[in-house]
Each structure stands twice: as structure tokens, then as C-alpha cells.
Image (cartoon, rainbow, N blue to C red; front, side, top):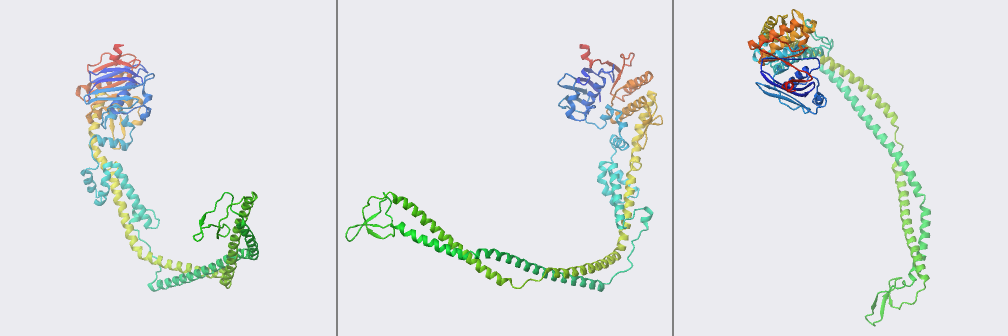
Amino acid sequence: MKITHLSAQSYLGARAVDLTITTPITIVAGKNGAGKSSLQEAIRHALGGDAARVAMKKEFKALISDGAGSSYATVATSEGEFSIVLPSGKGMHFDHGALPFVLDPARFARLDANERRGFLFGLFNLSPDGPAVVEALKARGCAAAKIEQVRPLLRAGFDAAAKEAQAKARDAKASWKTLTGGETWGKDKAAGWKASKPEETYSRDQIALAERLVAESDDAIARSNQQIGEARAAIRQHVEAAKRIEELRAKAARLPALRDKLQRDQAELDQWSPRLAELPPPAGEKPRTWACPCCGVMLEHRMADGALVEHQPTASVDPDIEIKRQQWTDAVALYTRSVANDQRDIADAERAAQEIVDLEKRLGDTPPAAERLEQVLAGHQADKRARAATLAQMFEANRLAMLADEHTKKAAAAHADVLAWLAIADALAPDGIPAEMLASALEPINERLTDAAGMAEWASVTITRDMEILAGGRPYALLSESERWRADAMIGAAIAELSGLRLLVLDRFDVLDAKGREDLIYWLDAMAAEGIVDTALVFGTMKALPAGLPETITPVWIEGGVAGEMREAA
């Protein structure tokens, strides 16, 4: 990937950068706080979409320079133009698995062993789910059926498949432990294990007799429960009937008083009804009249009794009559309601008296006490428990005897499963088939690391089968800061070449001393000359731009976040 142009506006400390890249190597130098790392992070964000200082998109606003409302960075390359716009986070990025490692070479050292191994498999297109892996498993004597079970997980990588095989082995061990009554699996112990058989077993006749005894107890319990239920129901009926009788007696006791009241109310009604009927019609009310068909005399209905009588013209009405009419009408209505209520209450009292007679007839004798019946039931239940326990013991003894040989076979099968799954797990472990396949990948990357060390005159870096990084034979963790920087730079260059990206970004080269910087320049020039890298961007703190650089290298000074054409315009 060849970078032809860089621009950044208001991205952290990179306030105004506009660089046209004309040589394979570009050194961006400046004093502390000049914006070098900001520019490097802007390039990384635009190319790969990876923000170095924030983790979430909602935090992108923090990447905008103070005082600016928005920000952007663009990188024009031979593969197209890539960008990032803030705070929206929109942009076009380049998707390549090796890109993060050439933009930030120290990233490889931060991976754990499994992650490094997985990255190298991807870098060299080594497929863990390919036919070669299946054939390698078969060649190691792994069970074909179990290979097919684990094969789908190989798509997720050796580690996932190996963990699944280990999990299957643990399951098989747990199954063996269950079958053997809690014993812990051991390779030698499991190979000769046999299930023990009980000393005593029982015949069919013995079991049939025990079952009959249990059935007899069940029948006795059922009969006792029925008797207790009947007794409790009878007791409830007695209690409820007695309570009802008490309620009814209070109502029936009112019967004489109710009858007396009915006589008094009826007498009052009989007195007021005729008096009301004798009153003349209300003033102003004209009765309806008819002519007699015989003699033509005018007739009307008398209001008191409805009789047809000769119509008499209305005479003047006493003004007190209307007052009497209202009072007597109210009296008739009152006593009419009282008589109806008295008749209703008397009927209720008579029904209550009759219901008392019926309930007393139905009560009969006192029901039997439930306590005695419950004692009998408890005895039957105790017999049932003892007989059922005996039967269960007999069944268990026979079951253990019948299944002893089957358990032995199942335990042997579980043991065989453990061994089969462990064989697959071992084969898929990092030092198994992956190590064999990875050896072919480690050879070219280690060759390039050796070549880089020779060109730069630095300590040789090696990646071991255990994915350990060594520099000059020393583990990466024991290296100094500058030694780690050299190792990371060479690993990044090897990844850049082997991935085909041929792009390398190195930050903080100022950790190197003067000799180390000279070595770096020589090495970068040599890689550019041999076509190992198309573009290398190097960032570091310097007091002034270096002089006397090869034609393959262009120095750029950045100050106050301004560089390139922006700086020249200023």
C-alpha cells in the first residue's frame, strides 16, 4: 500500500496537516507536544477505523482540538482514499487483518500466545478446518467419529476445537465418575475398574409376596381414609345443623308476636279503607258520565265502590276534606304495607319452625369420633412404610446386581471416550498439529526478522513455536524500552512484507540513541530500495530536522500541530 497524501484538521494536536508523500520513507519530526503522535493516531483512525485514545464512538468528540467544532483526517493511497470525520465517526476504512499490526507494530507483542498463533495462521492463510488437519488427526490414531464431532469447531480455530475436546473429555470423566459411584478418573485405575455386585438378591416369588403386602397396606389405608372422611363429613353436618337450628329458633320464636301485629294492622286497615271511600271526589275533578240507554238519565261510577249511580252535580267542597283525603290515603297505604310485611314475616317464621323439625329428624345419632379412626390409619401407614422400604431394598439389590455388568461396560466405554477426546485435545493443542503447521509459517517470518536484524545491525528477533518473542536470545519481557522498539519495528516490517501491505508506521523513534537512529535510517532505506515497503511513516521527537538523508527519505517538520503545505502557507 503506497500512501500519496495525508491531511488532518483539528485532530487532537494535529491542527492543520497537509502532506504530499513523494518518497517511500517519511520522517515526521518535531518537539514534544508538536502533534506528531496526534498525526500518527489520525492516520491510524482514518485507515483502520481504530481510535487510539478512546474506546467508544460516543467519546469521539474528545479527539477534536480545543476550540474546533469538527475534525477530519484523510489518507490517499494506492488502494483508494480513506478517512475519518469527527464527531460523527463516519468514514471509509481499509479492511485487512494485518493492518492494525503495521500501523502499531507493538500490538503483536501485546497479544497472548493463542492470539499470536491465531494471527499468524490468518496471515499465512493456514486453515484449521482444512482436510490436512483431519488427515493429521487420523494419522495420530484419533477416532473418526469424534473427529467429525469436533470438525465443525475447527472453523473457529484450533483453540476452540481443542477446548471442546477437553470439555468432552471432562464430560466423559464425569460420566465415569457417576458410573463408578464417585471415584475420580485415573488412566490406570479406570482401565481395570469393575462394578461390585450386592451379596444378596431376591427371587420373583419373594418380590411378589412383598408387593402383595404393600398392596394390602394400601387397601387398608384407603378404607381408613374413607371412614375418616365419612366421620368428618357427619361431624360437619351435625355442627352445621345445630348452628342452623339456633338461627331458626330465634326466627320461629317471633311467630305469636307477628300474628298479633298482623291482627292489629288488619284492623286498622279495615277501619281506614271505608272512611276514605266515603269522601266525595276531589274538587275540580269531573267524573266520567254516560247516558242511561233506558231513560237518558246521566250516570257515573262512584269512586268508593265503583258502582254505577245517577250523576249528581258537584256541590261546594269543604276545604278540610283534601287534608283528610291525604291523611287517610297515607294511613291506608301504611297499613296495607304493614299487613303485607306481617304476612311475609309470618310465612318466614312458619318455614323456620318447619325447618327446625326437619333438621332435628335428620340429625340422628352422634357421629363416630375421627380420632380413633386416625389412630388406626396411622398404624396402617407405618406398616406401609416399612413394607415399601423392604420392597425398595429388594428392588435396589436386584437392580444393582442386574446393572453391575452394564456399569462395567459403560465405565469402560466412558474411559475409552476420555482417552479418545484427550488424544484429540492433545493433537489440537498448541504443541501438536498447530505447532507442526505453524512451523511452516514461522520459518518465513523468522527469516525476514533475521534479514532485518542484519540490515539494521540490531539483535536478531525470533518467534518460537511457543509464540515467545526473543531478541538476542532474551525474552521480550526482559528487554529495555529501546530493545522492545527495535523488536516491534522488525516484526511490523516482516508483517508488512508477508501480508503484501508493504506499509509501516513507527512512532517514537526518539527512544533510540544516535547510533540506533542511524541504523534505523539505513534499514528503512534498504527496505525501500528492495521494495519491502512502499511507504513507511516514522514519527519522533527531535530538536531539528535531520540532514544528509538518503533520497528515499523525506523529513517533515511539525510544530504547533501544523505541517506540510499548511506550514509553508503559514
